[in-house]
Amino acid sequence: MAIQIPRGTQDILPGTVEKWQYIEAKAKEICQLYNYKEIRTPIFESTELFQRGVGETTDVVQKEMYTFEDRGGRSLTLRPEGTASTVRSYVDNKMFGSPNQPTKLYYVGPMFRYERPQAGRFRQFVQFGVEALGSNDPSIDAEVIALAVELYKSLGLQKLKVVINSLGDKESRQAHREALIQHFQPHISEFCGDCQGRLEKNPLRILDCKKDRDHELMATAPSILEYLNEESKEYFDKVIAYLSALDINYEIDPNLVRGLDYYYHTAFEIMSTSEGFGAITTLCGGGRYNGLVQDIGGPETPGIGFALSIERLIAAMEAEKVDFPVEEAIDCYVVALGDAAKETAVKLLFDLRKAGIVAEKDYQDKKLKAQFKAADRLQAKYTIVFGEDELQKGVVSMKEMETGQQQEVALAEVVAFLSEKKSGER
Image 1 (cartoon, rainbow, N blue to C red):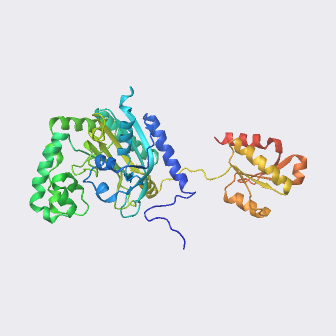
Image 2: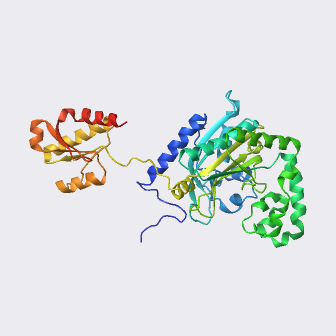
Image 3: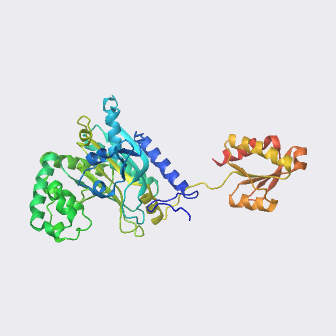
């Protein structure tokens, strides 16, 4: 019986993986422009990190984590998101002591959540995210949002919507928390068990419930914007003023709370408005998480970041029919006839590749016609053909596949000839 791939995972095969490489290269390019440096953290961490960093009342911690015990009896968890691990590394490696502040980081890597697989959502998925730690300046909130928008636009997406909210500071959230408890408590028995458990622990999470989102009390729940103190209002006003200055269109949604417990002040999402994208429109989410560094054992440090799923990004690009500028053609295909020519082809292929020329040859002892078909399938720009007669003369037959034009080229000049042709294409 064949062993099948685990449910909720995928194989990213040649022909598709090039799309991922293109997106990852573009993300790296944008991050370099914004002076964000790459960080790579372990795929598994102490379970306590995510319980403390993500929040014990979240769906992620309560239902979705892949947690196991190692041989030493330690509880470990495959990372469900990237922020907690990045902040743990920031604290562990004392990056807060660097004279270059804020610390601006980005990451790309697999995350794991045990949830129901559906279109664009997997149990193992790849997340790209950025984190800026060490600044309370609202302009960096706008910078982080601008970086995400710039990435999407640079990849060709046009049908985007930025939604933003303020969750306020600690004082504002406490006032809103009490108002939410008073609002939901008389009818909490009508809500799901998760919401009932969250009423006292974190009533803000009730607003994010998928089961009870159509309950009439959801529509009349008190808005966080009504409970912002003057400091929080001023902060939020500055963030949206910066976004306006950057010509980033946005909508304010007082019901946007995000799915993790560590957010304060700015929270935002970027959505696709493309008709063919599907029911779940969120592409990217993030916000400010003042307090998270202290929760993980570090000094008082403000932070802001976002994360996006590359799977959903690719789905959005396909929904908008964006072309991926992926080069699939090879530079040349070497057809060698006879044992002596085949030996020479091995060295020629090595020299071509060393010169930066993408080259291939037959490895299955195919007939001449089949080798030309292979060259066509690989979209070779040139085909080099030689046998023992050509070897004695020290030449090869060079065919330009697009035009069909053929010419003799000295064997010793093949690398220089193709290198010149390739440089002329740039």
